[in-house]
Length: 185
Image (tube, rainbow, N blue to C red; front, side, top):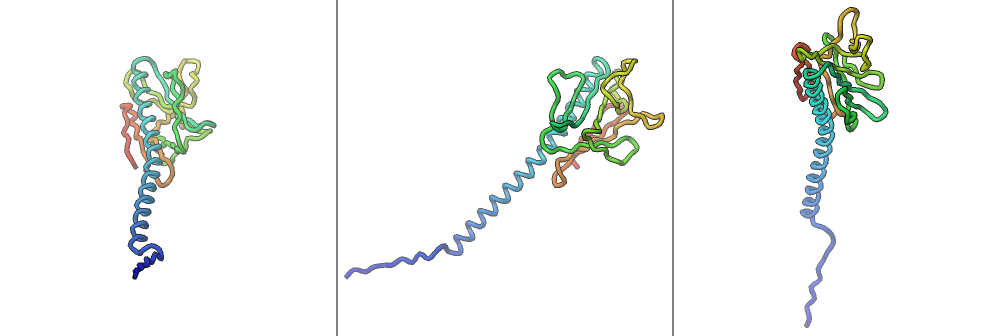
C-alpha cells in the first residue's frame, strides 16, 4: 500500500512576511537618506564653488588689479561670473537659493534676475571693497559702489541653501581683511 503525503501550501508564513517587510523598510530608509544627501550635496558644492571663486578673486586682485566676482541669475540659473576667467561662467547646479545680507542689516536679499552680488578686493590690502552695482567701469576705470546715502554698502554674509529640508551654509565675510568663514547652518 502506497502512502501519499499531501503537502498543504496555503501561502506565506507570518515569519516570512515579517522578514520581507523588514527588508523593504531598510531599503526605503536607505533611499530616503541617499536622496537627502544628494540635495545637501548640491548646496555644499555651490558653497565650495563660491568660496573657491572668492579665494581666486582675492589672489587675482592682489596680483594684478581690482578684479570682480559676480553671483547672478539668468534663464540658465545661478551663475558665478568673474573678470579674470576666460573659460566662462560657473553654473551652480540644482535648485540652489543664494542670498546675502548687507553689513548692519538683517534683511536677506535673494539673488534673482533683478538682484546680483558683485564683490571686489582692494589690491594693496586684500580687503573687501563695497558691493558694486555694475561690472562696467566708470570714466575713472572704477566699478561703481552701491551706496546708502553717502556710505558705501558692504556685504556681510552670503547664505546658500537647497530647499527648506536641507542644511544650508553661511559664508561670513570680514570686510577689513578680505577673509571669510564658511559654516554649516
